[in-house]
Image 1 (cartoon, one colour):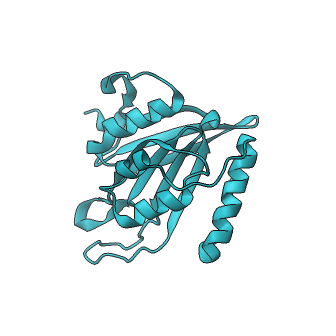
Image 2: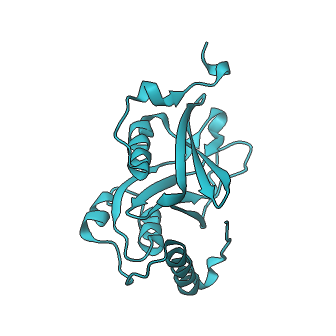
Length: 191
């Protein structure tokens, strides 16, 4: 299920999001800000993403792992993928992303004020796949919702591959496997 929120009245919508997540998990936990361990994981992130993590982390959850990456840029400064972060809590995988710029050339940077927050209950995560792309890596998360499956896809920098892989494997509750066994290469990139 996808719900879109306009966060003009942020406190009201944040409370609604937390109530929905508690309803999905069938648990009710007290409101709390991030604990000291969670805050230390985020200390090197841009302030905007630190604030998103504090505001949008599910109530009563603590961060187990986190990874952030900057905007992916291609030829002529064109944006391939927006700046984003993945947070793993005991119950959720939270994806925080900026909106993608649609400028043809990236010589001037767009000011980005909004964020897109996606909550993935860990119990819904079926599997993941990391694929090689020309200038990045792709992460596909397969989610089971009722009797159907949905896919969520995102791109991240090559240098963040090990961190993203560890986080997603931890979300699935799996032990680490070598990267060469996990990354699949599309046929057009094998040569």
